[in-house]
Amino acid sequence: MKVTAIETIRIDEFPNLLWVQVRTDEGLTGTGETFFGVETAEAHIHTLIAPYLLGQDPRLVSRHWSHLMGYVGFHGSSAEQRGRSAVDIALWDLWGQSTAQPIHDLLGGTVRDDIRVYNTCAGNRYALNNPVHDSANFGIDTTSSDRYEDLDAFLHRADDLAHSLLEMGITGMKIWPFDFAAEASNGTYISAADLDKALTPFRKIRDAVGDRMDVMAELHALWNVPAGRQVIAALEPYAPLWIEDPVFMNQLDSLGQMQASTRVQIATGETLGGVGQFKELLQKGGCGVAIMDLTWCGGISEARRITALADAWHTSVAFHDCTGPIALAASTHMALNASNCFVQEMVRAFYYGWYGDLVTALPPVEDGRIRAPEGSGLGLALNADRLAQPDVHIRRSAS
Image 1 (spheres, rainbow, N blue to C red):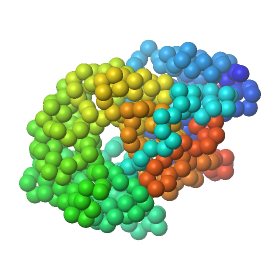
Image 2 (cartoon, one colour):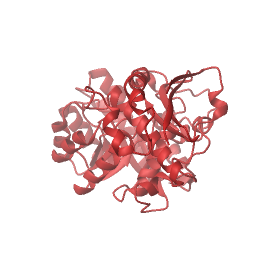
Image 3 (tube, rainbow, N blue to C red):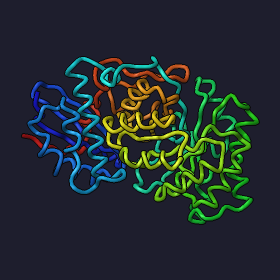
Image 4 (cartoon, rainbow, N blue to C red):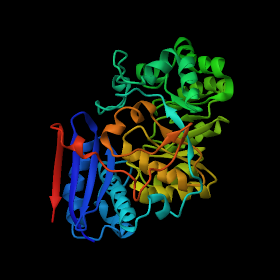
């Protein structure tokens, strides 16, 4: 089997998403995905990865992995790393298809048949258009007929939202009501009034459903150490399952300080790229849950290394999904294989909204638990009908 073409796909409706299709001479096509900075990741794929990978056997995933990055871009979730991540996922998909095995079997098999999900309480258009991740990119539209506008709900009706999720069997929810205060002060200060306002959703959830709902507090790496400590201390009485990305991610020492100052788990890592950064994070005691995004950290190949490293540190892992349907599918395969993973993220507004328009299948979710799609590789592909629409742009490198 040889790689004959590599295609990148961008859709005007989703300008922060990039898909990759790796085509072979045996008619198989592997699919990958990445998110944010798509033009730069696309350029890396066609200028460096395609000239190397065309004509190669795609099943030699470990051999190819080190060649998917250039001389620069080794650190962080850079454009090079995001491009490599997307192609790596596509190669695992091809490997699974060529051997008639799902990816979780290639990883060594499952340790569970399904896994609990938690809902990241975004709305249907959250973070899909603005390349900057801030409150201007919340995408709230309460006039839309979209099924779930969970971001507006957690800001104003968190108690009703908690009941709605429990009715679906979902017993975990992640919310981020502190962002407005961080943006106002560059993460250096939060007033007593703003602190009380941001804590209101947590009070509503606990008053409404008690401890039947696990609540995760997302801080989006917007705070410095003193302000972050203040926020964490204020959250502790509400017993969050974890507090995510409490401080700026440019100094991993600060995360160690945060974790040492609280009994609540610090969850962090989704914007890191590569096992080296996670090793430093773990050495500094910076997290109780290591979160990784397969479309940013180096793909499935690197995620399995990070997962094993975290296990050696007796640390849990979780896989990020607030991006696209390929990320969710690949993450589900990883979560079913990883013994130190106990929950998988999903965004029900995405899952029951536009995800299904883009792909041929989704990981089934029933009673708050998710399992891998049936079939080999990822178990899904991009929807050909959607790719035929006029807002689709395909760039192709071929041998």
